[in-house]
Amino acid sequence: MSLLRFFCQRCYQPLRRTQSGEALGPDTSQEPAASKLPSAHWEPRDAPEEGSTSTMETDVQNGASGRTHPGNSRVSGPCSGIFTLLGKLSSGRTLHSIQLSVQGTFDILSGEGDGDQALCQECTDNLLEHLDSQLLTSESDVQAYKRRLERVDEDRREALQEELKDAEREEARLVRELEETEKNRERAAAALEAAKAETQLQEQQERQYRRDYSQLLWQQLDLSDELQSVENQLRYAQAQLAWLEKTNAWRATFEIRDDGPLASINSFRLGCLPAVPVGWGEISAAWGQAALLLLALSRKVGLQFRRFRLIPCGTRSRLQYLSKDSIELPLFFHQGRGGPSCREFDRAMLAFLDCMQQFKKEAERGEEPGVCMPCRVHARQGLIEEPGASGECYSIRSESNTEERWSKALQLVLTNLKGGLDWVSSRYCQK
Image 1 (cartoon, rainbow, N blue to C red):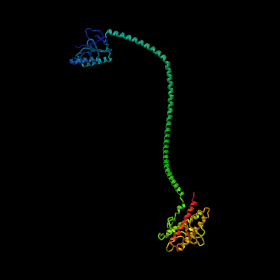
Image 2 (tube, rainbow, N blue to C red; image 1 turned 45 degrees about the horizontal axis):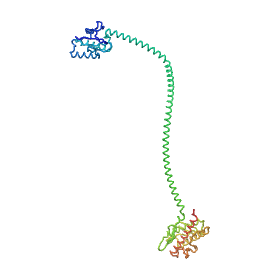
Image 3 (cartoon, helix red, strand yellow; image 1 turned 180 degrees about the horizontal axis):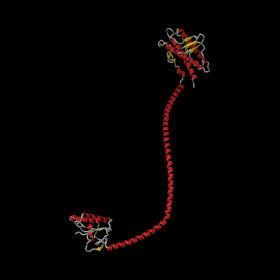
Image 4 (tube, rainbow, N blue to C red; image 1 turned 90 degrees about the horizontal axis):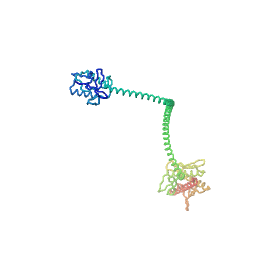
């Protein structure tokens, strides 16, 4: 039959328990009294096989303690209220007894059970003496700690009171600072809102300023282009003015050429030759330009013709008597019905010579007689004298005259007009 053995938890000597469960000390017969506990019996029908019994015994012993004692048996560690089960379990245990044994063992191992401590009498006495000495030492330490605490408390109470007051004052100061900080935060929040509003206003103003700037910049570009255009126009006008200042208006208006077979004024030929036929329309236009030039020269020197009044009118120019009759003489001619006769045309050319002679005399009476009309005029006879040694005279009448001599007389007329033009240009157009 399997037996339960108990050992002292301090000296590991086998114990023998009485019927009341008290430990009596070392047992030489190795018979534990705890074998009478209900949890120490096994039911025969529940006995496991030999291999299983050994395994279960080993598991219980391994779970109960991890300490090795003499006799090569496993016992519990030095914990109060713990018993170590040794030897083989009884084979006559029931399921209920196993449950009770396991529950009791668990309670003992966890310290919740009220089982007696497995100690011998001598170890118990030693333990009590040791506990008494520890208790006395602990009480002495407690008294020393109390005295020390009283001294420490008394010494530090005033310092702690001062620290407490300082802490309270610091707390009050921090509270005031917190209140001031809160007020500052509110003021800062209000200032922030105002700054945001002002920022929005400034952004709107900035956008408006940018639009205005863009508009002004556009206007500046337009004005710059306009200014550049005006400057270009000014430079062109200045160039034209300089050219006009250098240009003689008289010579630019009236261009007379008398070096060819036929003389011309403003590209209109005055006269005709058998080899160079000229139409009467061109000759009439040339007489109109000559009449315009003579009238302009007379007005420039302040001359008022006495017997005739020049009326330049292109190819229909004429001269008018200043008498009461106001007869007009045509300074043009064209063949066909309704046209002037050759006699009327000749009388008009004679009147033109009379006006030219008046201008020549008026110009030569001045303080500066630099007028150069090289051909002498005989208005009454209708003759004009060629300058030079020959002094030949040519009639200006077309009737009973050859084309060559008549054209030569007209050429001498334009020569005189060219001389008068040069004299007026040099006298009245100097800077």
